[in-house]
Image (cartoon, rainbow, N blue to C red):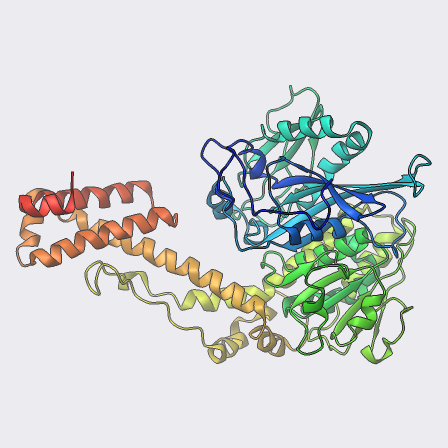
Length: 592
């Protein structure tokens, strides 16, 4: 058993004596496994040590001391939750010791995946299946153990379904079962955006579709795709990541737009819930209500006083960080009274009952540890509440016993349209900053410098809203200008702008390379190339060859949206130019 204070070198997987920097040898085992999971952990309760790491699989995966401690404490509900039986929840922790390079190449997945579903470069997700049952054979009188899947993928639905299959079996049969499951996962194909995959485990086939960035918003469910002969018939998961938003947001539906605004602006928020399951689901639902916008702030679906970042998040010497914290210990109410927004949710109602909506309350009323459910904030929403949506969901939907998945679809569509209405004017303005295609000349300003993207001017954008604002696609009234002004100061504007600017730069580079290759078409044949080279010095020609080569390497390394035929033409052009040079220069540019 590995105590919390046990040693923990960085990471080594593969041959004995391999470096622990996270780089695996090409022939390393568990390559396919690590495309989905980093490791599987078993956390147990020890009378002397408290929570302790009993097992890590694969056995040669290394966690730092801080990561071990975080996983141990976050894998058990705290004493205030009183979780008996089986419960599932999730957490998110910071990787220690800097970013680590995986064996597999993330770029193929990240290039095709929606930005909100790309792998976490600096955090781990922990997906937990916790069991606490009476057991007279144990000194404390209870069997307490957690099975934890550690991954950098935000596939909460898939990993919860996987845990539902393997955890009960593991608690009965222990290690041999776990080893067999890990070997099965090591046979799975890698997650590829846009593909429907069949994932066999423990005699069951999970059929999932991996979302792609080119998907239409409502097209995430997998279709039966020619696998009618599969035995057993596959268990089709409608999504690898989407939560039941209606169930998560039931107690706060009256304030869902206020919460959407708080998330959009990256405001610090504490969610105090009765259990880790409710806490983690509410936090994940909040962070995903901005889809397709990527959530750029920190968030912790489940957080405890033992977390290594506890002091950082609770200090009063500086402003609260831009983070969404999910907690279950009422002690946090006292510790985080200086935070501007605290959401307290109560126990869930019986299925089908009209949920009691939490009330909007002033932070000054947040004084005691037995705080009543409510959204404690001084924030005033910029947009008016959509009363028609609330009527459809709360009265018509529940009274007519509309299925939960239909309720969730209504709510998700509303949030999607709200986010799109907000983002579309920004996208249109950003597109207007792109240079005209006719200005992208291959020789005009030098091969290495295509035209520059014009700067984003906030005042110019705000002026454009009068004739091209969100009112064109959204019926909600309110202070849209004020919301944009606050958005410009948030981490989400910075994250969105950086991503869009990067994509536009790549597009410009691709268009520039294509313009160069189009110019090549007019220089077909050695005589034409030699005629073009007449008024060029050898230094200019060598510089051109080197820059073209650099451009090709950059295009391939950054996977620019350039056709393969274009890259081949550019390579042929380089070879033709080199072939027209004196032999001594050819030897310099093409050493043996």
